[in-house]
Image (cartoon, rainbow, N blue to C red):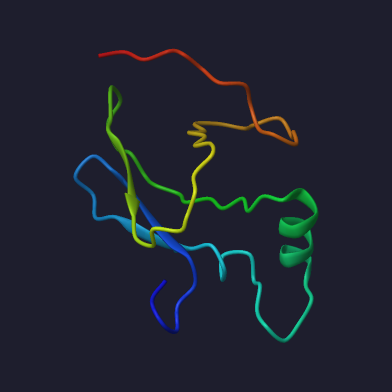
Length: 99
């Protein structure tokens, strides 16, 4: 991890510029206060973050997940195109892919 920053990854769709996400600040965690984001991450043993993109054309698109800090571990990526039902582990895996 680079000095002065949290744990980061980046995500991009098609040829859009990658959006960098700091998983430490995405939930509002910091060294001086015990807050709900930190509490949720520690009790669930998971850090959930989200990134929003605008896709202007229908059809197949390419999602890229970029390593910024090598200590970030990705367990699950969820691509939501509408409302998701609330659940602890997220929706079940989808095997659908078109090409």
